Length: 368
Image 1 (cartoon, rainbow, N blue to C red):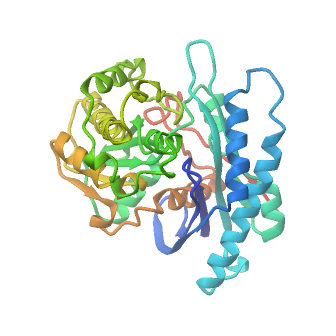
Image 2: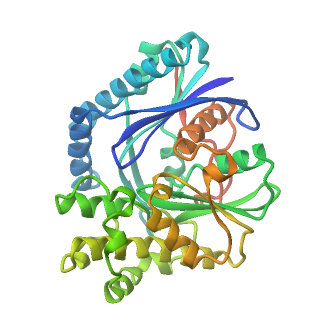
């Protein structure tokens, strides 16, 4: 089937889109991919929804703004896809299924005696009606309800993508988004995954808090800063790093407070080191080294992050583009693939990726 996958990351930058022809097992063709920047209005309402989510107490009503933000997100998806399809000579009648991740505004991992919570906003029913195409959505909540972490979900796609490229195990795929997560493929169908620590998210929040833009473009602040070892060691002392995988994070799980005494440049450099050190620690948890690591996501555009990873990891560090992958669209591709798996009732989360007891199907399908 021909599936259009959507992804909007926690950076609130753009709607990413990618088309795959897939049965949810193998990939027969990679269709076009593209992005459309989020409007300021949608970005603002998603920020308000995120703020409301962070203050949302358990067993209390869902914040009212979620519905408004979900509708705004769906409208952004439709506008983005209309332009994208027209630019590539396609119409909605050419699409068999949509895989829509939605905008994550909240993710709380499970604790002892307490289930996790995760919220992705986007009105899938409205989108299905407007496009006339079934929409696969809500990929995480079934896993969370079963005691899983609800993240990461891309590992099964990382395996399919590696196989489509003729790569061999052992291999690691490191996605650096707001949070960094890694997939380890040890051979056969064996995959393990978890969030290693912060990705770009803390750096983005730092730069925004200092009124210096939305992100550290090309690592220009970090490149002239000095790592504060004391602050770095304090950050690495977070109890998350002592917990065994699988495990997951929200971009707000680490505080910027320890960085407040530092100049922007030194704080950015320290956070780059934090991201890389957390990845190194994550690799150490696996007990075996892959032959190479493929870096996807926005973090690979930050030369300081890539330099820090190369200095700390004892294996070749390659970008997605080095292997002919579309590094900015891996997650959009992933949710096209997961949409196809949802349609066929195939599992999308696994004991060694989210901690569920057995491989689980996930996602829902809404028809026009």
